Structure formats: C-alpha cells, structure tokens
Length: 86
Image (cartoon, rainbow, N blue to C red):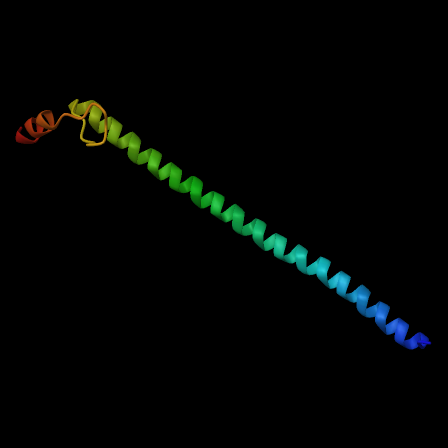
C-alpha cells in the first residue's frame, strides 16, 4: 500500500506537468503567430515593391512605345535597338 504522502507528490507532479505543458504550448503558439505575422508583412512589402517596379516599367514602356522586357510576348529586338540609336 502506498502512503498518502507519495500519492500527493505523484498527483502534484502530474498536475504541475499538465499546467506546464499548457503554458509552454501557449508561449510557443504566440511566438509562432508573431513570426507568421511578420512574414506576412514582409511578403506584402515585397509584393508592393514588385508592383511599383512593374508600374514604373509599364510607364516607361508607354512613353517610348518600345518593349524592353525580352520575355514579353510583343518584344521586338529591332525596335529596341533603333530606340537606343536615337
């Protein structure tokens, strides 16, 4: 037969472990959520910069009428070289 003092220690250790686990998981979840939010902000800032660059490129393309992006479907190397000669 186990003494009552040993049972108290056992159940106290069990309860302490459960409480520690809950608190620790909550702390880790808060860190993860904060990290995910920061990554989302950085991703949106990156998309914004890309959009600004694309907008500037589109504005420049509209002024000269020459497509300077070699991967664009309406890219014309001859027209680009002629625009550089001027």
